[in-house]
Image (cartoon, rainbow over all chains, first blue to last red; front, side, top):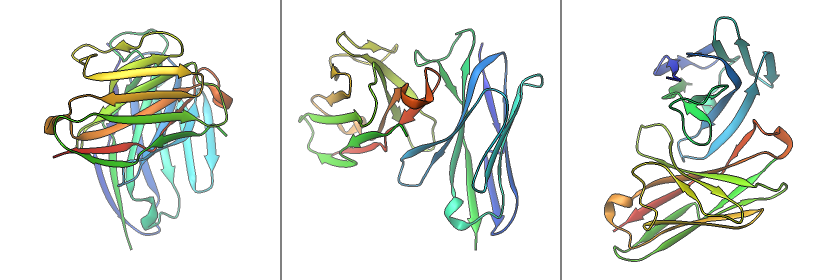
Length: 114
Length: 117
């Protein structure tokens, strides 16, 4: 069965700290998404990865295909980064995921304290 | 970039009434849109897949007569919650696949918080 595991579930850090959120998945993927959900509920797509590394501002996403693992990093974290970060995988072989092809992790609730 | 507009962002309705939620792809044609429901502190749960010009495909356990989906054009899908009950109160989100991100890319709407009183 296609599975996506995220860690940690909850993370509280001080402003300025370097943040890492991890995502591991069970089998081969076509793409992996990192999403950000703010307290109001809206979801923003941060990255779509199939290999390597992407950077946007203070956010960096990496993926290791061999190890079936992806990380989301936040440099110089700020209270406005407080949100839920969700990893979602598009598996190559559909098995147990939704008809949209995505299997979602349970999310990491990040709080950055000033 | 690819933008999906979802409206309304919040709605309060009385039990027994119907509520329509719209999801529009603003700068690309979305032949497929997806509707999700999210309970507090839970992840997104796919409700149905909306295909332009054809009937929606519902996930197991989702009542198609209660959650009516219409995808009449390449840029608009609507979800109507019929005869709403308090247990339908939830956060509903749409997404569209495609656009500049290609076939593997998904763009999400900002969500609609429905409260049924």
